Length: 236
Image (cartoon, rainbow, N blue to C red; front, side):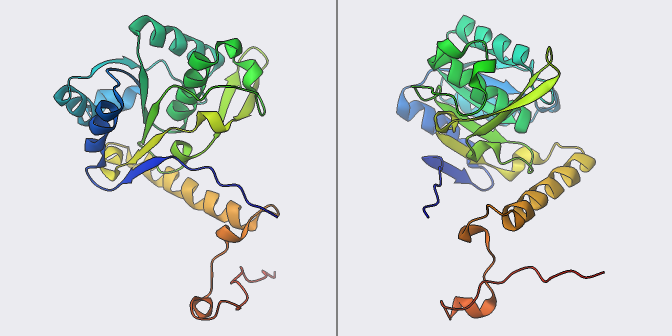
């Protein structure tokens, strides 16, 4: 059985990693950035760490903050319109899972306009082109949306959410800079940290898990044939 892993072509990790955003855009010839972000990130001033980098490289930008928690079809369609009106050529997604999900859908529709209704993206949509070049900068720890091919959109009219899975939506660049998380309220910091932990646990205990999610025992480091470590059986 083969395990498929889809990763970003490039990712940066560590304090000050946002400085690489300008270099990535300039080296690829992008000049007009569509910054999708949550209102809190803009209001708190954390977004200045991004705009200072873009200003230094002479890259024009506009903000799009019409993004709700659990983003809606309307949020995506308004974002597509805003992207086109600014004549943007790339996306810089700065925020949590909702921002990343909205940005993925916008990027896909810009290059695959036949899915403009958004609903047709549900499931594994047969998109033909990769999304608009996107750099994803998470400001929360819980979703890992910057490194995955999934996103979730809310259909308000039908009162439901739907999941989209598409290898064409993964951001080309992920920038994981811990300084971008400093402005989060303490309760949100704690909640998203627990979210990250539960995702790790889910990845291990699900029946569909793969060997990569298993934690090796200390013995297995020197004995390749050792049985992988597993959670002990819990009894009442």
